[in-house]
Image 1 (cartoon, helix red, strand yellow):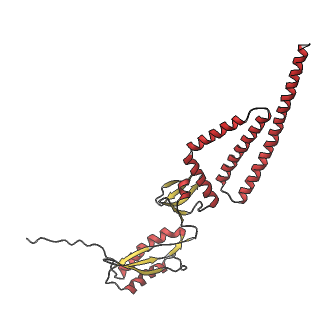
Image 2 (cartoon, helix red, strand yellow):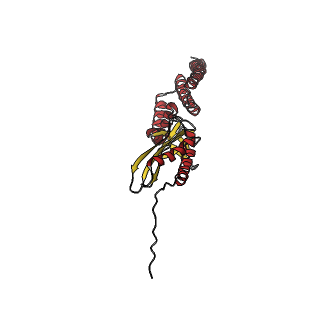
Image 3 (cartoon, one colour):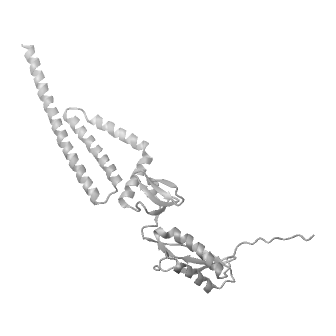
Length: 271
């Protein structure tokens, strides 16, 4: 028996067997990479048509790309004869461990995805959430950044933001300014309402529709309080708030209508 011929035949058999597997793996890799490219392109097109946020598009595209590539690698390894069952189990265990370690971050990520999909607010909106109020500066995957009223940067985790109440002051385009002015019980109610209303109707940023309103709110211990409700564009809120407060004080003073305040009475001792 010719041992050399036997060894040659074995080598030829091994080369043919594994060569075909390697060739098949190469073909699967090329075809799989082409399919992945097409899937990612179609996904990007769908998200663009649905007006998904750009940062969300990039994140989801990267995530989907990695998932598809890992699946392709497992298929290729299986084609060349590598045992993929244990490999997949290791990946699953690693994914579970990472998920447990990043539980909070994953919650923030999920919240960010929900915010970007349902869009309860957008950049530039004035919102109130989690006890903070500010203009939305940036919406990221894990956090949302606001610019506070005193120009502070406020960073809110998206998990908490998406699970809590959100007040969007910008959505409707207009806001009502809620002010209260107290005057003396000696003041004439009709005259007081007229003075305050004149301030509102003469302000250029107070809207005529909805119309401003001045009504008696309550009879307090030392004053008659008037609810003053002008409407304005959302971006004019603070201008109207501060201007009306100042102008009403000046108008009431000019009309001789007293605004009650605590008085300190100085008692002089008689010698």
